[in-house]
Image (cartoon, rainbow, N blue to C red; front, side, top):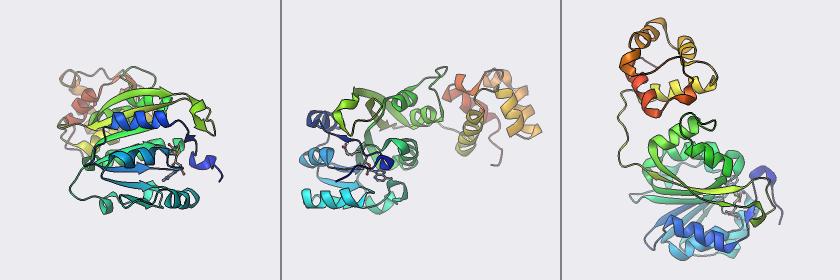
Length: 264
Ligand code: SAM
């Protein structure tokens, strides 16, 4: 069997860590679990011991076939597909799903953004990712790690960094340290008048993260909307000479609410 670097194949070799992840995920006998990238199956085996049903999505036919032979079990359904192409609604009914995974590092952000889009399907997401990406996810305004990923994840989820895992516990050994994080969908999210506009403004201003908000927004908005914002500086309580990385989610919401009439 070979390991494909291009698919982020650094397999966990320590069973105790696999057990620790499952313990944090609090999987019980009634749970439906999805695993992304089961690989050689170290997590898969531990999940199966605890859950009701497991669906595991593996892109690599070689490891998909390997697992089919190794773990034949009526409670396990293996799908040979790119997770980014999976239509999640095909695999869910009414019950909420717990996601557990050691994610392929090079597509961590696209996978997390996809999980965020389908957040109503999940009761928890427990994932191993690069430690530095974990720090970006939990970062607060004003930190160098604060980004679109932090804002989007923290807006929809309670986010916890659980523990780190050193690189020698993987084969082949990666260059980076890993960490396990947990995302729990919030019961209630802050009401926003125009959610699509909020994310557009955040995307645009973070693409120019070193620019003052005033200057990014002048470029992004039409003159009328820009003037509404400038006239209402005190109402939005935003100092537009700051950079986007200094703004809390609530401040972005205050700003967007002032021009919520705007068509995208
Ligand atoms: N779960 C195993 C473990 O913990 O040792 C393997 C984790 S390894 C970091 C990532 C796994 O994701 C590999 O098995 C890889 O083939 C799979 N993978 C990579 N890209 C994928 C994709 N787009 N969709 C589904 N699986 C993918």
